[in-house]
Length: 197
Ligand code: OGA
Ligand code: MN
Image (cartoon, rainbow, N blue to C red; front, side):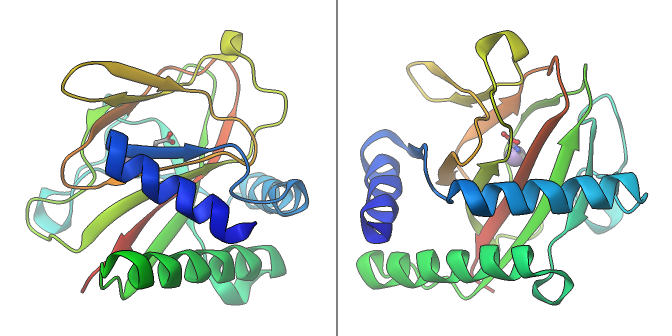
């Protein structure tokens, strides 16, 4: 079951340049992570994210409007369970595709109503460590009227993905342009990267 989900993500990436599955995490884990994110938000532990790295780093709401907090296994059982799941996925990916992933980083993200993340790629120009992007959503009862779609830009077309709870989307960090459309409702996710360092 778990391997079938991993397989679907990987097949999507190979055949279509991105994979997306509705059930990457269980409803129970999604609920626990959502509660954890909300607790961090309400206790003032989430901060505006930046763009770029080191000397290129800037903080600008014109490019992205989310607040984030990096996940750490030690911080909560929900974070630990999520990281364990990610490790199982990395193990499967390395075994089936010889990708040599040996590190990862994930952050919670919250986009307030009206915020967005303009078209971009995830790999830094100065650091090629990020190989794959994996975004998991935590939003119950999301509809197309709530907007906040992830747009994947491919040579031939644009694909819009709704940030529904439990869904994850997977793509190469160096080659896929993507954006987050302005959201009409607080939008919760975990965005992260599988790395080779
Ligand atoms: C990112 C990102 C996409 C999403 O955090 O870099 O592109 O759907 N997120 O939240
Ligand atoms: Mn991105």
